[in-house]
Length: 94
Image (tube, rainbow, N blue to C red):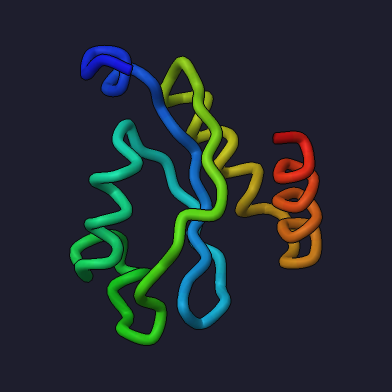
């Protein structure tokens, strides 16, 4: 994937934190964003030392930032049990 394509694709992603909580977000560069989270320079939620390191457990590509943000919002509205089912369903489809 060339750099231009990487920067125009938006991703909705889910991290599994060290404390077993989920963190959901969106980005145009998954590798850079994961490094930010694990260095303590990402979102306030992942700056808490007990939540690091975090592992990328799910990512979906979208053609627009808006669509990725909508997926993030929808995921955040789910209960923990629903989130686990969503992630398991997506894993089994790969």
